[in-house]
Image 1 (spheres, rainbow, N blue to C red):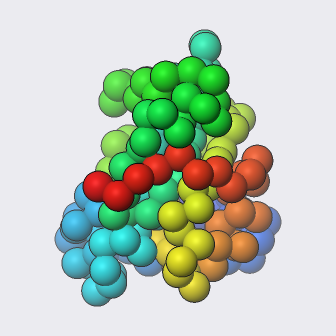
Image 2 (tube, helix red, strand yellow):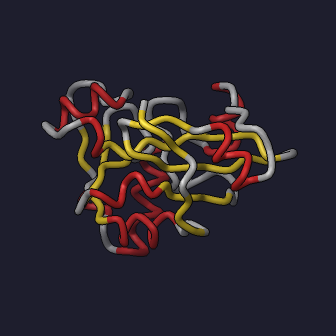
Length: 155
């Protein structure tokens, strides 16, 4: 199960006990915000895009969307999201629990500047009913992100 992979991954940072699991679904930004009792913007959603024969992940605040022009400027290609089967294949996580931790393959991860307005954010942990509260610095460290990018706009 993907959440177990994430829990195992987090052991290297000694934060595995900070993973929260819910009785209800947290598979969407709105459901996660309700489960955590926070505003939707603080949910760190992980989006997956095609990059040649591989994929990249972009983690963004929950209240924004990809700006295609900014994305193309940053990555040199059009933003083309993976389909659900590809998401599972590349990340090891099903839609609703996708996160940049405990990945099935070594993927490049980028963090969008939209999250920096918060002290902490809440990414999923590999299942549709889990999350962890992280500072932006922790998110950068634990996700092994390449860099912060500005590829989003208000939804």
